[in-house]
Length: 223
Image (cartoon, rainbow, N blue to C red):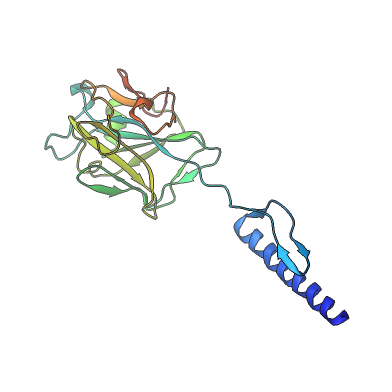
């Protein structure tokens, strides 16, 4: 009998050592203690580690005004832009993330690229989009220059935008105009020079109602 008790105690010690190591490795934890009843081992409920903050597509400027550069109408370069927002309390690394539209996709920076907590990132094809047409971007806003069009160029009558992480998981997606693949109804189209923007920044219900027609676009600011 004494040897059986020793075996049970030894088994419990080995099991708890394994659980402690697993907890340290994954930041997971058990909500209640393990116990032995009639030689039957039972545990509490497992709680997974917290998920990373959800980055959202916060503002899209797809129909470029004449005084704000070139629209995507077959020209070599375009001054369309997309604003991402990180509503969480920790920075999010978007290295190797992908932004795609209905026709094409492009990878974001392949170096360490964190969006600050409660911060913004702006994606455009070329640096001059900001220096020539949108001066005064707040300090701390991450600027991501693709040097290629966003997707295959954002269509003015309707398109979609899909943001994927480095494992190809969809992080956020929207559609506007005559593209109803994501939202149906989709976000209504806006006049040239306007943008579509979440109000307030980061609002997320998974519907087109999150967005407004922004007469005066606010890259890097939010509303």
